[in-house]
Length: 235
Image (cartoon, rainbow, N blue to C red; front, side, top):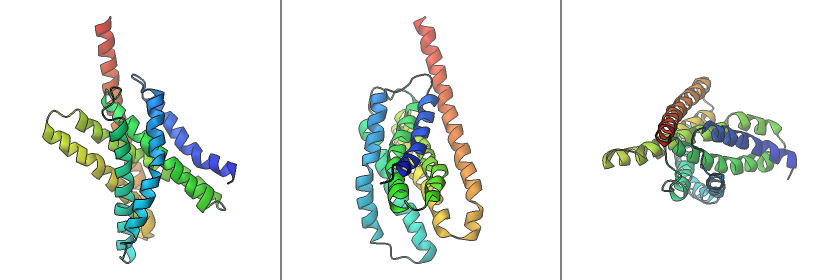
């Protein structure tokens, strides 16, 4: 395996991990817990590959229907389900998950753990002779996993801190459904090869980034206010 290609495959995810880590300014999560979530996100590749291979055996659809099935069910549902499962099993009930921004941080860590291994499989193994695959995925696919993770964590935190069981269940469902739809739409546009859909790809990316940044800022502001309030009480 070409070491340079491995670096190309890993660098985008590590860069985004650092971005999210430093974005969480006011109540940082333990590095050991973040690494654990990231590692298990990476290990989630194993069941994901198995389930995706199984689901592909049911892909009897032609044309765009096949692209839709692969995008939303095979990739979108399976990958987001297991990434969320990692967060639920490791971080959701942990004492360090103490504010809404934490849901985004942990969900992104699980997502980027998976994205790291997936990217190595694509860049350094499957398409090792085409460096442009690595470059393209560095700016599109890997950041997309982070954006899906932001939406997942946004709704997980709304579920965790909901004022009623009804709202908690509603937001918990959305923590899978929303990233699944975002993920599926991203893949479907690319897999369809339909000119009209390709035209909307850049606007869709702009939408993903704008919504994600807005959600990050909402929770970052809450984190800042909580931190300032706690400091005021302590003083």
